[in-house]
Length: 360
Image (cartoon, rainbow, N blue to C red; front, side):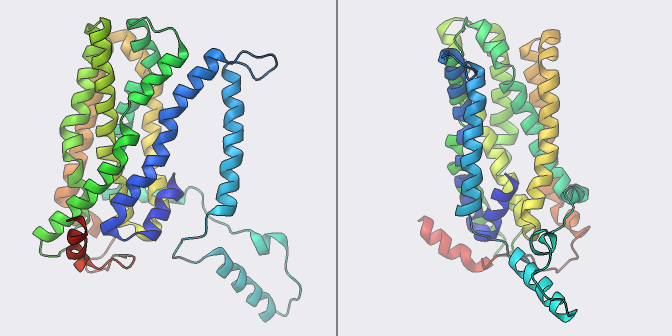
């Protein structure tokens, strides 16, 4: 996930980056949408003899998918980094050996191993704008997991759904993978619109304005409505309402994640994969916490009040985004001196006029 988003930062100029990120998330989120359905069907109906039966068959499928993914990464993805590539490092080491009078190809480590600090990206969370953006997506993802993790304990018993395959289909109702393209284009549109309002002055935080509708209204509102629908409604009408709210919930989730992650790449393009890694670290730590406490919380206060609390966390995250939008330049100045040029990957600020013509 981190390297993929970093690759988008390497390849696309900032005025096209949101759309590209939307395409990337379209593929990324198709898996989580299809996986529960496929896993539910396999767990329900795969009962052949042998070890790979029921839920175990899903794990064997994951082994095969992981193997195919590894092959694709190894043989189908070229290097896109604008920094020092591994081939350059190896050539520098070869010249150093020659300068020292050493012959031969060198040892395995000297030819193939590049040392790095695997937790070095976490330091980026000490940059205030990155921390605020990561908390925004973190609280959002925590609330999303508060909805998705207990589905088998909320929707299933409420509407007497005992078939795992049918239950898995409710994850298809999540509109996040279908929203990815819209939210990416909307993030680019917001950036171009504010670029025009500012007479060509680029402010990275303007991209975060694309999250206002989702972060302030649609996502927390759908969480509250879904919680009380699952607690109070019944019958086919209640089940249909839950499916619609799940779609709205997933759609509005991407209205937050896509622009915010693209913003992180915008302001840290030279370390784009690292900043997404730091963002992911905090985001999924909070999501893991939600996975642990959401079911006891539902048992204690009910799904309606649990979802109301989750919506409150989204609103708290939206406050973080508002702080970034209001004080972003000052927050970036803590680690980036005023006047430091930001890498644009060949995207001239004046390009907004061309892109507006293309959109038209």
